[in-house]
Image (cartoon, rainbow, N blue to C red; front, top):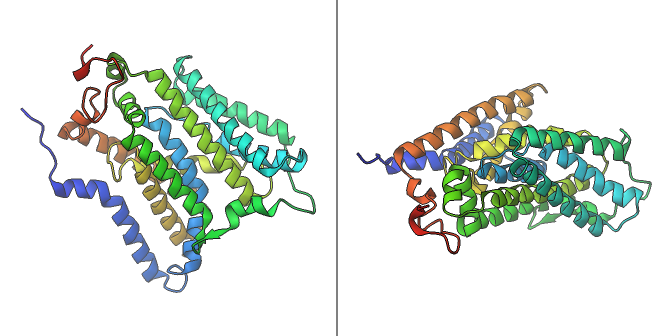
Amino acid sequence: MTARRPGPGGHLVGAYGLPALTVLLVLVFSLALPRTFPTLDTVDSILSTQSIPAVLALAAMVPIVTGAFDLSIGYGLGLAHVMVLQLIVEEGWPWPLACVVVVVGGGIVGVLNGVVVEFGRIDSFIATLGTGSMMYAVTGWVTDGGRIVPGPQGLPDAFTDLYDSKFLGLPVPAFYVLALAAVLWLVLERLPLGRYLYVVGSNPRAAELVGIPTRTCTVYAFTASGLIVGFAGVLLAAQQQIGNPSVGLDYLLPAFVGALLGSTAIKPGRPNALGTVVAVAVLAVGLTGIGQMGADFWTVPLFYGGTLLIAVGLAGYAARRRLRSGVGASRDAPGSSEYPQPPGSPKGGGP
């Protein structure tokens, strides 16, 4: 008996329900707060303040594609932004060189995470929690438990402009998010490497049988995550302009909420870059709206925690529904034409 495919209406609701919710929230808050919410200041605030959570959510999303979780991204963000300021303020490095070194360092940390998970055969939760704790220790060692404060001359204007400047009347960080999401969409949806990553995440045993290097693909995913975290650290340093050794942990939960909630949109049942951006937009609109309505400080962790539970439940439901309906089953199969075989591997998924 063939699996029943969902009708076009059900597919549209699953794919575009989250963007529709964003529009609905904007309308509701605009009606409830006509003087403060539907303004250019609110738009600028959302695009600016949510850029770093969006970048970090994209960093969390990449390993999830392969079925792994990188819990070290919050610790890595804290270490990266501290190291940028340490190199610029304390060591006197030119800011472009400091930024490049920190981003490359983030990539190296990602490689180590991938090696520990795949070649050390340690669960990704445990492995990245351990490496994250080690990074937190390094952060404390670099800062000696204090803050890195620039001197009277401050930081170079060109460096702080990485976060503070505008382009086409909008905050520049918003364009970083769009560019990064576009690159990840291209790699994951249009290039063979991205398709292999999805296969590894959905059925690693089948991926191995057709010759896909599952361990190498997972290391690639962690490396990409580390590079993105390093870039997010540069942005955070340009935003904060003070090295705070504990600030990175505040971004861990929002990142995973955005990544997991994003797997319920655009491509329901599979993590994807565009869905992650939409999820971050929903969270940003919701938090901004309840903040302008005078909500207490404890509503923010309550909002993120509740949304995380909902996101995990919806992501699991979307994945199960996708498997039951058969939609994507042939597309995710390693022997399908959409997921090309590595050179020399047998066609049709045979051993």
